[in-house]
Image 1 (tube, helix red, strand yellow):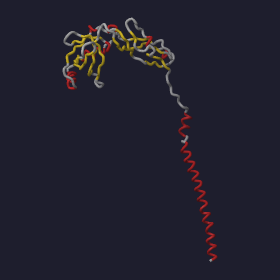
Image 2 (image 1 turned 135 degrees about the vertical axis):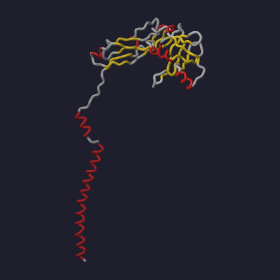
Image 3 (image 1 turned 120 degrees about the vertical axis):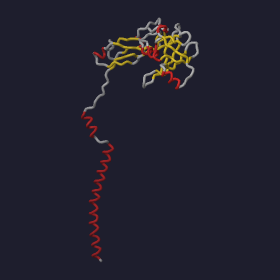
Image 4 (image 1 turned 180 degrees about the vertical axis):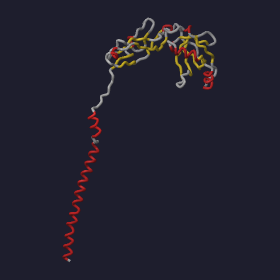
Length: 250
C-alpha cells in the first residue's frame, strides 16, 4: 500500500513571479517550480524542494506516494500528478501536485511487475513479452497499491496473462482497465526463411526481361544491317556492266 501522507513532507514556498529567468534562479537554489491544484481550493503557484520530490519519485511507491505539502498554513495531503525532467541532466524542471481528500476515491495508475521464468521460454524455446506495464484503478488514497505482481512461471507458449487475473480486493479497489487486456505472453520466435543459395544465384544472374527484349532487337538490327551491307556491293557490281555497255554504244 501507499505510504501515509503524514509520513512524507514536501516543503513549499509561494511563488509570485513566473518566467524562465525566475525558474532558472529557483533551480539554482535547490527548488523547482510547481503548481498545486485540485479539490475545492484555487490553484496555487509555488516552489518545492527538488530533493524531496526526487526522493518521492525514487521511492517504492513512486508517483503514487501520498505526502504533505507545507505551504505556510496547515499542511495539505497531495500526490504527484505530473512532472517534467531535463532529458540531458535528469534534473526536475517542473512538477504538478494534486490535492487529495483522504475520504474521496481517486483514479490512479499502478505498475505491474512480473517475476519467474516462463515455462514456455525455458522448455519450449518461446519469447516472453510484456505488453501492459501499468493498470488504472479507483480507490481511496490510503488504499493505493504500490504495485501488482504476477508470477509467470507457468506461462506456456501461446498463452497469455490478462488484467482480469490480477489479485485485487474488489471491496477496496475498482479495476478500470479492461479485464481482457493482455499483460504478458509467450510467443514463438520469428525466423525469416532464407532462400536457397541456388535460387539467390539464379536471381542475380538472370537479366531483367526488358533488357532481353532490347538485346534481341539489337541483334536483329545487326543481322539486317549485315544483310544490307552484303547486298549493297552486289548492287554496285550490277550497275557497272550497264555503264560499260553504254560506253561501247557511243
